[in-house]
Length: 276
Image 1 (cartoon, rainbow, N blue to C red):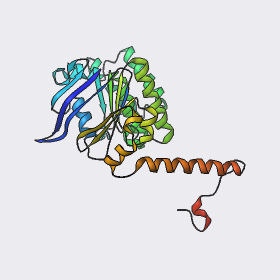
Image 2 (image 1 turned 120 degrees about the vertical axis):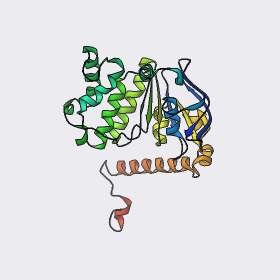
Image 3 (image 1 turned 90 degrees about the horizontal axis):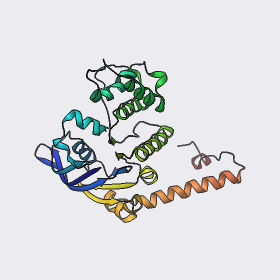
């Protein structure tokens, strides 16, 4: 569905990413991870056709740069890290913009099919009750879900997400990723998302691509990529050891809670003074 080979891209004359090759198959969730500044966002923007590139970026065997913009919008969509609010549209109108590629006019000639798709996305992301509110009045988490709904109603073959769980609480993070996994699997489409939380990559990713200094450090199944030595070489710290230590703390806290009959156990910091 998506295949890139020898991809180089950047801003001006400087390449941010160099010689990146990977692919995403139908039904797959591909997680892109790596330190800040390693080229993750540049990679997504290149795949989306926003940035020029050298090498190959193919969607269903067609070069991204050769696909007309309106047609490309039906195949692939990118939801960035932040979306600035230039005009205070309502939630409904903002989500409806995702149907622009399918409509002859701008928000004026929505079909019954369009309205049904929009209503379903609003309901799925718990936005139906606030569909008439201005997006300038929303919290960061609500706004994130609005822009995700706009992405979903575009009904693309590939969704590109740059830190999609940013601003979302734990409940909505988990629900979002479960929904995206189902969306990709049931419809045989692909999701390519940038993540910083390695637990989410382990839990929801079918494959993972680890970036470092603009190049691909590792690509494969999450269990292969999230290798202790590979992560340490990229991030400069023993992430696996830290994760295992955190897991042991959870287990210990659970054991302590059981010993107390399920009652909450005071934080360790409470023993001798104020809680940190």
